[in-house]
Image (cartoon, rainbow, N blue to C red):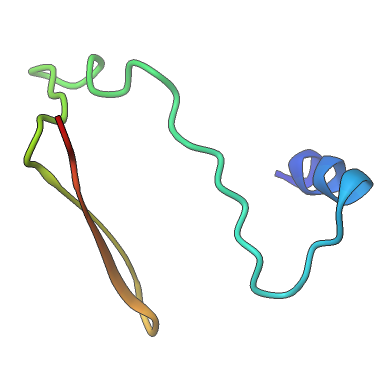
Length: 60
């Protein structure tokens, strides 16, 4: 993570509160037992104590 932040700082200014999104490696759902993949209509919820929860509906 430190290398990611250093690389970002080389090309832009990072301010307090900036978010660095790295994503998830492909195949994470495939590695589950049984395999599980998101489908259209599923709701992805991401929560942080304080700010609250972000909900995104998966489209088609």
